[in-house]
Image 1: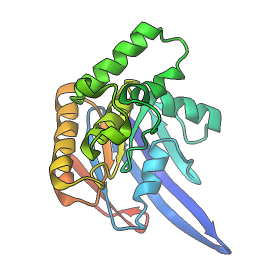
Image 2 (image 1 turned 90 degrees about the vertical axis):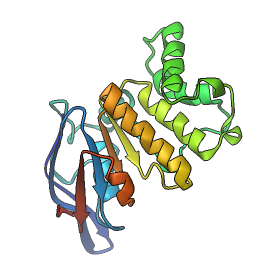
Image 3 (image 1 turned 30 degrees about the horizontal axis):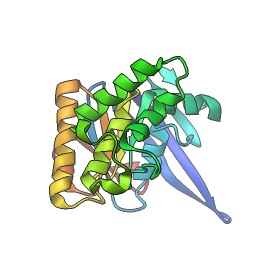
Image 4 (image 1 turned 135 degrees about the horizontal axis):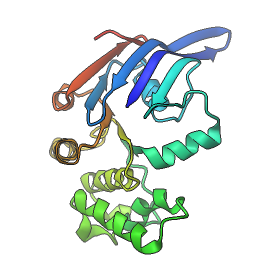
Length: 222
């Protein structure tokens, strides 16, 4: 479903060029549950940004569901991000002036062809999947960290994405809440066959996944 070939991403730091990714090749199958690990500066976030169509590689190719996306312009990349990729962030990225319901609804508001009734049903279904149907009218400042992350996961699911990308999804949570979030990811993958790619520093989190990719200096080393 995801295929990267010889991905290089180069950044210029003054007169010095640095390869954040240096020839990365990777395949992810539909329904896979994958962890990406590595020390700071290893290229994890850069790789996730390219998979998430937030950035283009300097060279190499990236195909998503058989479509070559590494050379698309910003408008087409935005369409893919909005319809085929769900994002879960370490800091939740919820809008404080929107309820849980409205935060989850945001991605599909940009799909103008979806009727209001269907849109609302999809939001309710997503919040029900993450166990927050009783908190739909609460504001972010009324939610715990674990609940906020569940809203973030519901928002990622509401577009029925090809893949969910999670960047350190337990990084801001206490151990109990973190365990609950990983148990939720486990269930989403096992019961709903959601394809999940997550970045983590936590070996215990990585043990839940099917496979772990380890990066060092922009290269896959294991």
